[in-house]
Amino acid sequence: MDICAVVMAAGNSTRMKSAHSKVVHQVAGKPIIKWVADALYKAGCSEQVYIVGDKQEEIRNVLGESVAYIFQEKRLGTGHAVMQAAPFLEGRDGYTIVLPGDSPMVSEETIRKAVDKITEEEELAAVVITAVAEDPTGYGRLVRDGSGNVLRIVEHKDADEEELKIKEINSSMYVFKTSLLLSALGRLSAKNSQKEYYLTDTIGILIGDGYTVGSVVCDFEDTLGVNDRMQLMQACQIMNRRILRKHMANGVQILDESSTWIHCAVEIGQDTIILPGTTLMGNTVIGEDCIIGENSRLDCVQVGDGTVIDYSVATQCIIGNDCRIGPFSHIRPDSRINDHVTIGAYVEVKNSSIDDYSRARHLTYIGDSTVGKNVNFGCGTVTCNYDGQDKVGCVIEDNVFIGGNSNILSSVVLGKDSYIAAGSTITNDVPALGLGIGRSKQVNKEDWVAKKNRLRGASFIKLDNRRSEV
Image (cartoon, rainbow, N blue to C red; front, side, top):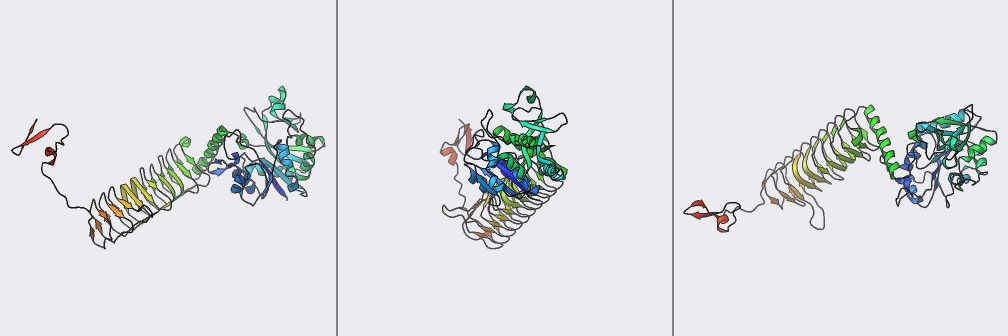
């Protein structure tokens, strides 16, 4: 069965107030136009042509070259847009799906339902996808006869008082017999209040030719388009709710739907709990029995089973099983944290690998380094990985203990089972089983504070080794 699709995507995004095409703005981590394309692919339609305008390069970058593109030089209405696809449609004997490119909510099921109807009922020349709207303002109305048959579609601006009372709206989504669509397109005129070629007029033309036009009713949310920032927000909210409920149906516990945002490609294992304020983005994959949040953001992160991430940010990294991350940790790209690792409060890891059972519980920076198993980072430890020109980390082997407030300079190797004394700046390798001390000898100067008059609060003077208040 020959099924192709024409997608209208040539708009200028005027109401979006954006330098970019409105159809490349994202909803739940996927460009609007990609939602449309994927729904078509899933419904079995791989032959797709996109009517594009001045920002066509952005759309091409999203969809690639597996689909066809036709440039619409002038924008003279929806009928004029589909007219541009005539060379793509000529010679085809099957069916054509027509969709707006700004409708990310359209589902595979809705498209299949319309295609099934026109292919199973041979007398139909077209199928209109409709919905019932509580407030149909701005939508074209579906006008039926007394028997419920489709008579015509009238645009809101051209509707009379009785037609404006109709709540069944046109979604601007259709399936046509291709040959009849081409015939009707050739007879469109712009004799209306907008002086545009309406695709909806093809329905009246086909009915006038004696053909029958069918309809399928979908959920109103499936019809929602995105023309401005408010509608983009609404589409994001609806899609996010769908995604959250899918995860909950699969065994994920989400505590607060209103403050949790999850992109469409995210995978989450059962019995994982997502706490309020959490955002999961990109191709993030989270294992089972985890706790994520509160107020954490993960972008393209792989997380193992049983891991807890609290008040933290992680991007393009791998976090293993049974780890404890946060609060207020930052795991930057290209980091790999293995199993049973603790990355605690105000710890940053950048482009580093940390092996099993290692711990950096607070106030630590680990950059461009390789860390072995069972390493302990004392509070305030810094790997000094940048010399002003190059970024080079250090190597910290298994079972190393680093005392608090230590600096480990670039390229240094801390040998297995070695110790670093607290407050050290380590500039050279430390051998296995060795103790590295990199600090000056302590010197105490008696009565320096009193002599320099540096006392804070009450003042004192020294008399015969006794202190008396002045």
